[in-house]
Image (cartoon, rainbow, N blue to C red; front, side, top):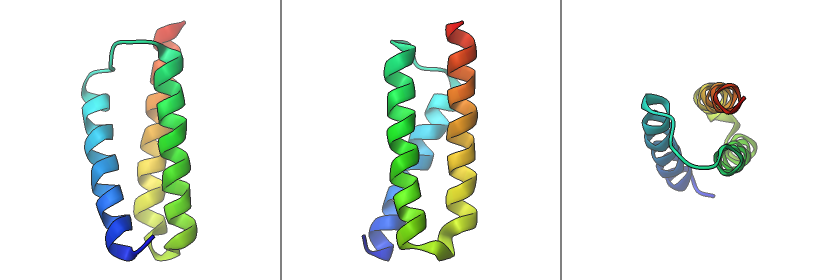
Length: 76
């Protein structure tokens, strides 16, 4: 993944995350948790390929994990 591709992926990830944070999406909690897990995995690949982005990527990953916790709490 090139630097520009990583930047574009981060922009997309932040936009999706912001929408989900504003209003938890309707639908299956299991499906949403799977999507969150896939997004975290994609971001972790960016960390490996571009360690200089660690601070920014780690912050977004933490926000996704927090959202996952909210989804789990809402599901119970």
